Length: 630
Image 1 (cartoon, rainbow, N blue to C red):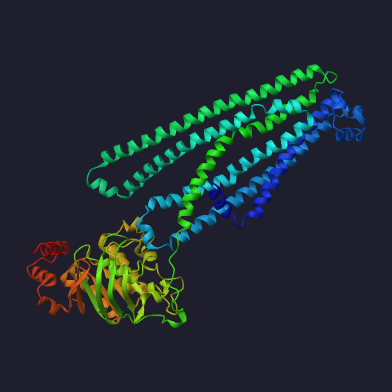
Image 2 (cartoon, rainbow, N blue to C red):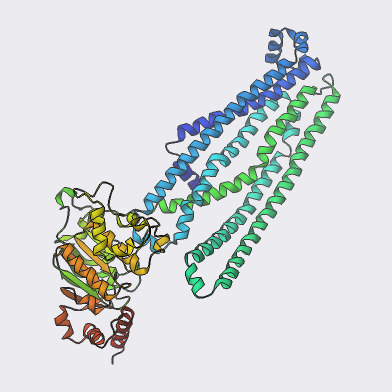
């Protein structure tokens, strides 16, 4: 708890002066609120009841300054006016408290969201291997909102409850000790009951939040995969599945509400019992009279007012404590992201002024091995070289480590052993951002934002151009034409202003791949990586794209990952990767003359198996046969 409170305090950096203003306004409103019962007491005892002996000395001097009891008795509206003015001033303090609390909590929440978003953009990719996207979204939205509400409202209510009680007790003791004991005798029971309720309701809150998260995940999953649900006619099954989680959420919500109902009903009983004790004791002491050691009517009214002022905030302690528990859980969840170390460059990283704006593109892997955590290594002593301006094709069955090579080149992961160099310099010596600007990558499943086609193609281009090269519509259209997608775009009624939909759902698979390719070509990277980027296009379109890339790239370094032999033939050399090991490396002519995976696929292609899925399946089949050879 203490650690969570310290973390919460750390989040208030930059807003603490405003929070101090909130505390001052809260104290001012509280003190002014406690003046009103004193004014009522003076009016009753000093004017109406003529019991000036029970009027405080400071109040008696005020009465004399105003002309004495008789003058004030004829102008009782003075007391009413004083109550109105004090209430208005307390209202100003309350307004300032609410305004400053809202502004500070909103500023803290905004900065916290930005910090979370910024950190999520800089944490290592391994971080995403062990967390769910939906959970991260909830941490950045619902958990931040929980903290905002706590800081803007619930924390102030907690402070207000403590302050109301701390101010009330000294004032009441100054008026009458016996009535003070009567006014606080049940208070410890109310506080203990609130603490007991906090412990019970915290578990109920956590169970309800978990059920809500499961229900939200089910909804998000089904909406994302709605086409799969429709394709397999699983609507009824998914509706029943969602209904089960919805009912579970309802049951846990009802359990929470039942606990809340018990608390409110029981606390109401305790509160009114406390007020009843004050009323009974006060009436008995008033009847005794001042001569018999009793109290005045004004004193009794003051005590009745004070109990009404502080008892209800104290009654809220149970709910406030439960909200505190939720806030502490939210703090821990948020801090998990903020405490994750971001990607960091090596200590011997080269300064940018010593690095060229664009590299030549020579790449070398030297005995590189890599594994995800403690799993079986994905790559084993992989060694090969790509000359600057060369086109290297990579072939291998699924899971052989092809995409891992790309991830290591981009330093999304770092190899466990061995060395990877770019233009003779170890990758770790490049600043990560500078290194990644040297590569343009098109994945098999490209990601498109829910924006226009124009926005997606120009995604990597800052407004006004990139560096010294201005990029306008002509260059964008040329990149789309080289990617063989310009004609398809112009057939849309809105052209380049066509909305792609979520994840590019408005486009076909081949169109998505080609838009992603145009996006990369527009940047003209020194090294182009196509990770099975032609799986959704026909061979004729693929050949046209490769020819355009070859002319556009001006012999820049290109890495092709593909299953089609027709694609592999376009490369200067072909690297065959099986089980994380390099089993062959050579030109097309050299490899078809050797026994192995490439020559087998070449024979299949000549036999007519040129479809991408057929070739991929044949690749896996050949790999299976190799593993089972005696």
